[in-house]
Length: 351
Image 1 (cartoon, rainbow, N blue to C red):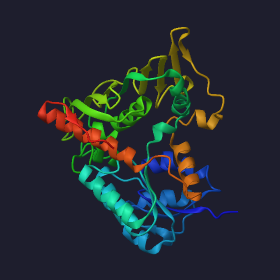
Image 2 (image 1 turned 135 degrees about the vertical axis):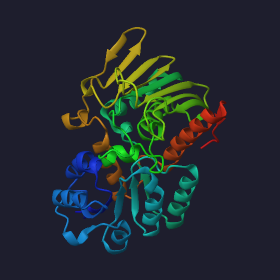
Image 3 (image 1 turned 120 degrees about the horizontal axis):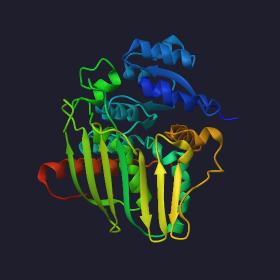
Image 4 (image 1 turned 90 degrees about the horizontal axis):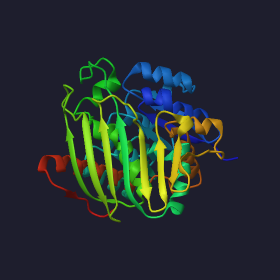
């Protein structure tokens, strides 16, 4: 029997404690949490107790963990502004890397990451978890039958707390409201809507028009993002995201093609994860019989993402989310910001 992959965690905050940990517990035959790094002692203690990590393998400096701990892979779940530095350090340490999105805050940083990954020959992937929900996995099997897509859209609306700011006492709120930490609506929550709808369209984005602005909240990052994208195959998509709008009928993406349409619901309403439209049948909810109860209720898709990623790492196989996918998503975000400033469509070079 193959030994479990030894996993080191860089960042042990809320998303690890609430979401990632659930996936790791389901994969005990494949992966063992062996070391931790976090600047917050309470996070180290809580996650260390979750996975029985010895105190000597709990670090307040991730660089010490990379130097001293016996690990094969790291996951990076820290504020966006730290991703590039930490990924490059992990690549130089010769370990495989699973990074939370986005891969970086700028394409310049992303280029440095790809160079470090190539130079060190280490596996590297970014978490695009919505591609692994039961609804989305089933939707991907329907695309061929629906034919050539022509229009797609995705919506992710919500209201942040009234006191949402970089001074918020909750760290997860504070860094997301900070430009210095890489926060903002488009790169945090709308990031998911972008890669989800683009995957359904099966064609990279070539041109982006957008308005990425701060309309309501007293923060130095955007609280609304509206994108109009033209794909290489000529299809069009829109992405609507906001932190200053009630989230009614929110958290979904859809594509419309020559033979019908698909609508995938994210985040909520798991029982209605996928609908398909055809002229003959109208809109119909699709059953997901090939997924067990745990998979159908994995609303974020993290559990399946990690399962497939660690399986690929154990087999030395291609990882399910290629770095190029994350790079393209970041290129769309940069183009949207530039389109807002220059009031024109921005062209994205081919992947």
